[in-house]
Length: 205
Picture 1 (tube, rainbow, N blue to C red):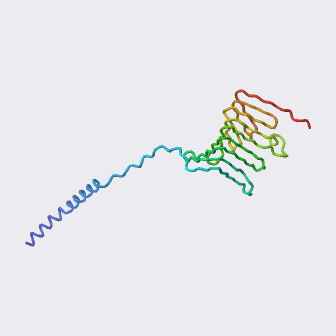
Picture 2 (picture 1 turned 90 degrees about the horizontal axis):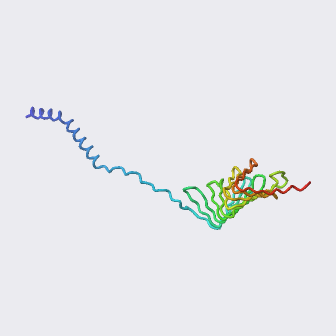
Picture 3 (picture 1 turned 45 degrees about the vertical axis):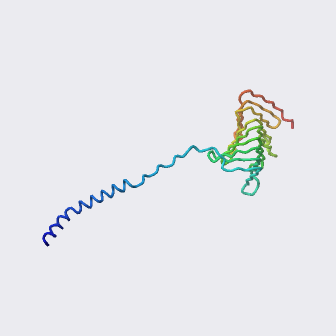
């Protein structure tokens, strides 16, 4: 009897690893068949051009490091669009001061500005005025004014351009054209289309 048990155990020990491997294979197969498949990432639809916040009858001010007023923006209503990071302002009015204390104002029926306000598009009876700087000669000592139904201003590079009819006044001089680009840093102006100009001689000293 003892010999039979020993013999049976020997035979069982030979097939035990095979059986365990079989059980392991069956268990793995069962896990694979019953594990829920990973869900595909949700398909995102197109980003909608919808405002994420609104403002009404507002005023926003910024200041220089010394506490002096740098700029101020007024509007009857404003809407921010996160997909383009732009701010649309109704009945906009702005005033800003540069480091030398020169005042620049702008107004329009509607404005569209990018996130850091370095680029501003003015629509509808648009007007930009850069006041003369007292005590300065040449262009700095003259008043500049731009008028049109559309004006595109680049604040960091001090450029104003328009692909629509525009009028520019420099002191007493008046220029008009179908399109214009003015670069204040380079002191250049390019006018296209029907260009007209009236130059008023400077009064004698």
